Amino acid sequence: MTVPRRTPAPPRERILAAAMDMIAECGLEKLTMAGLGREVGMSSGHLLYYFRSKDELLLRTLEWSEGRLGVERGRLLARAGTARERLDAYVDLYVPDGHRDPHWTLWLEVWNRSQNADDDARERQAAIEGVWHRDLVALVAEGVSRGEFRPVDPDRFATRLRALLDGFSIHVAVGLRGTDRAQVLGHVREFLDDSLLADV
Image (cartoon, rainbow, N blue to C red):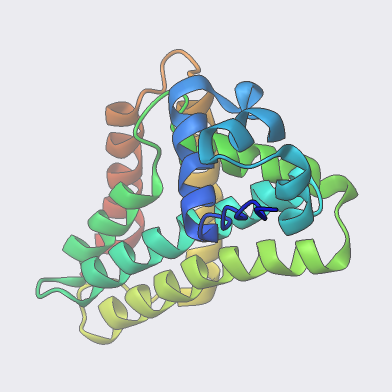
């Protein structure tokens, strides 16, 4: 009797990349465990074995996507140039590409589901937020120390700037009229000019 060969499960990164591709192409509402399973050649039950729930799949996908963005952010922040030039690059990376940007679509869903999330999931979300915050604090502190920026408290300024970026980014991601990406970047750069470059 011939024993059928078991098909090995695809690498986890391939599953997460496939989930992100489905969100980009079809929207989050079309991402189901069954549909993702068909895409990667696995049953929905097998996916649930790896991820336990759709909430966990979404959070893992977000962590994977954030890891890729983190590499890009690190490259941008390490390049030569003024602190202001690198701050503009940080903002450019932060703000969604446009309506239904897949990364921001995923973020919004994970935020929404976090109301009922357990402590572990909340800590993992906080860790994602934390690296963006720490990088921004370090960049603002560098600009202040070099005399490029007026003397602000880097942590307080970063907290306020990220709140501004989050608000604008939500408007872009959901397609609110009057807040497209170009307009948002203009508002943020004007805010940075007024709050960081005045009196330098």
